[in-house]
Amino acid sequence: MKVLCGTDFSQSANDAAEVAASLAARLRHRLSLVYCLADWLVPPDYPVVHPLDDQARELLDDEVGRVCSKEQMVETKLLHGNVSHHLITESAQDTSMIVMGATGKGAFARSLIGSVAEHVAESASVPTWVVRNAQPLLNWLLNNKPLKVLCAIDAGESEAAIPQAVADLLLVGPLEVECAYFMHVGAYQLEATDWRTVHPALLVPDEAEIGVIQSRMKQAFNQTAGFGPIAVHVRQAIGNPAYDFITIADNVKADLVVVGSHHKHGLQRLLHPSFSRRVLAHSTTNVLCVSLLPAKDAGPHRTGSDSAAMVGRV
Image 1 (cartoon, one colour):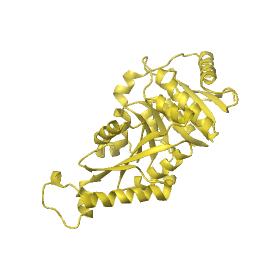
Image 2: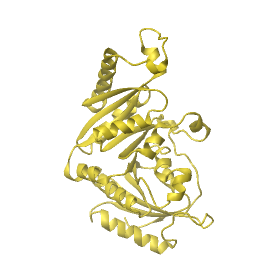
Image 3: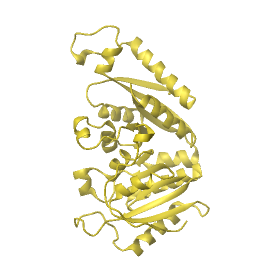
């Protein structure tokens, strides 16, 4: 298996490469470091660092020397075309996770179409790490310091997928886990003992109902990960609760937030705004995005052009 890391040699990408190398070493997986050069028939402001292949290969080798030990299993790939497409395609084979920086060199493109990290995280079938602050992740990986994790859960697929993601994180290092459970108004009405006739904004779960939810979440984590979260924050959700979740993450000083994605694209995204996309775009901390689709439906979302791959040193 491999840990796949996309880079454009920006500071954010350099931080992500350090995290990816440490994750790969801890899991005893090989590190696959990928750099994608743009096709020539693209707008002139496309975020290319060095257009020459030889220079790009040198940059990749230098980055490997910076973040990896001599004993570590490493491969480098220089690709051409759409970076999101290639990372998603590369992740479809023998990949345990993707690691990326939150921002790159294409700031202008980010303001128009969203970052590469956001697109990959919401399209790949494997967990995707989006690194904003590498230090707590490196302290966790290198010094075994517990990682403070906040998970977003609602009454849906995330009740199974998120505890499993936490169980996988435990294989890497110690965790301190809290959950934010969002109860949508419709779901609350269905679970209530009677129908309410008041305005939906006034529908607030009482202490007994909050206790039931907290017990259910702790049980779900105990069954999957072998331990329960130290706190379950229950919130009413009217509309998209992404900003409420980000606020909770800031308040508890989370090192990592874990969210799920249904891989919505195009018109589907316009009709149902994505919780994970908003968290990816606006979170101030690191994000781990996991797929909420069944395995058979979680294949790569294919966009972009074909390219030839050149495998570097292994």
